[in-house]
Amino acid sequence: MARFFKNAFSDYLITPEDSLVTPEGLVLDLRLPWYRSLPLSVVMPTQLLVDGQPLSLEGATVEYEGRRYTLEELPEQTGTSWFIQDSVLLHVPTPQPLSAGPHHVVVTLNLYPPYIPMLTHVTRGDAQIQAA
Image 1 (cartoon, rainbow, N blue to C red):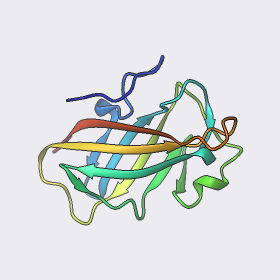
Image 2 (cartoon, helix red, strand yellow; image 1 turned 30 degrees about the horizontal axis):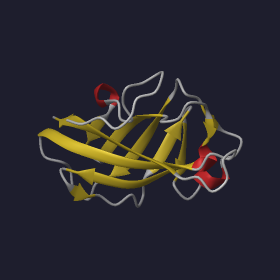
Image 3 (spheres, one colour; image 1 turned 90 degrees about the vertical axis):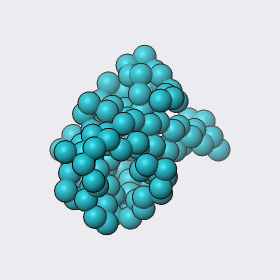
């Protein structure tokens, strides 16, 4: 399986051992694909594939430091920084529970660093997640 990024603190965008398949959907443990901390307001998950099929991010939330934010609320989170050694959890509901066994998950995350105008840093990461 290809890996799309490495930073000083994590080899993966998705940490497979800390990601889960639940009856409600996926909980993906994400590491920041950037060299310094960023406000949550400049982070946006944009695409999710499960076993090669797109999964809607409608209803998805990002959990950081015990708080959950809808994707629509992320741009307002200018005072909440995602530190490079921390994970965020991306909760994505599925229309029906995923079948037992392994699932290949690919997530695309866009970053808009506030100190580099007009840059969109696109990172894609993948992992094999086991459903019980």
